[in-house]
Structures are given as structure tokens and as C-alpha cells.
Image: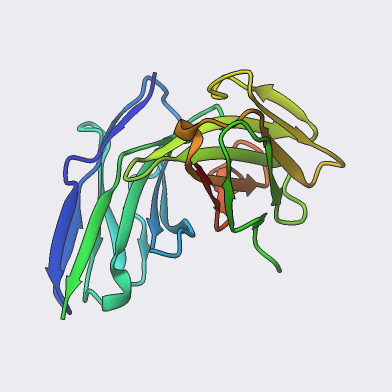
Length: 113
Length: 117
């Protein structure tokens, strides 16, 4: 069975600063994919970044980057130059040969002006 | 192109009534998923469609829940004899379907917030 753990229920960051959200996972699959989704108050789940487990290079998308530590089964999200619009719930998810996403319980990010 | 759409956006119903929630996936996406998100919780998988068939219904919480998909496109999630514990946000997602990361990526609709009084 696959599991995803987000141990930080809530995080705060000052505007323009950098914050890292943690995620650990467990899977017995060798080929899997990891995702970070953002859910603002509008409820819309928005894909932030995706990482293929077979790729050693960490994925980046503008101000968002991941630190993927495969051996440690860790997949943290770094947000640089935080903006007020980054305030949201952030969910980590894993999927493998099957289609099913396993989600963590989320981290609420507050951005302080 | 248009994203995943869901209707209604909000639904208030009385305990014991039946409700239907609709999902329109992204055009060309063969895979469709339903999730439930209770207040302050993560997402709970309900059911997955590949085309019109549902290979995995294991997440449906009881036989009051059912879903269908027609024409490989629109899907309807039906909850019969609603209970107060059914109150949640119901999210639909779609993907191209396949084994690569890009084809696995799920795109979500805005959800339907269901409140059972």
C-alpha cells in the first residue's frame, strides 16, 4: 500500500521569503510519480509541480522547486519569493502503475504581508 | 481549451433525498476520477473510470453511492438517501490516461459542495 505523510498542518512565511513544505511517502513500486497540488479557497486543485521517480534531476517550475530524495522517500516543495497569492492548502500525492492518487492530509500555507 | 467543469457548484439537500453531481472532463481525456474531501481533510478516492467502464469502485463508501459515465465523457455521481455524513466537497478529475507521468497527471474541477441538513 502507498502512503503519504505531510507532517506540517500549517506553515507561515513572510512575503518575498522562502518556505519549504515537507512530504514523505511510502511505496513498494519502482516506477511512480509525485505531485504537489495547490488548493486555494476557491477549492480548485491546481497542479504545482510533478516529478517522475526515475528522474534524478529535481523538477522546477518558476518559483517552485522540489527536493526529491528517493532513498529517503522524501519530496519537499520549496517556494521562493513567496507571494500573497501562494496562500493555500498544499497537497502532496503519489501514484504508480495504477491510476490512483494517494494524497497527504495537506499543509495550510499562510503568507504574511 | 476548457478545463474540468462540475455542477452544481453548491447543493443543499435534506436528509434522505437523492442527489446527482455532474462532471464534464477535459475533451479527449479518457480517464475520470471522483474524490471526496471532508472538511479539513485530504482527498478520499471514490471511483475511477477508463472510458465508460469503472475498473475500480472500491472507494465508494456504501451502496448508496453510484456513478456512471456515458459516451466516454460526462459522469454523474449519485448519492441515494443522503445522510449528514455525506456532507463534503466532491471533486472530479480527468487525465489522458496511460502510463507516462504526463498522461497520468490529473486535472481537477472546482468541486461540488454538498450539505445535507
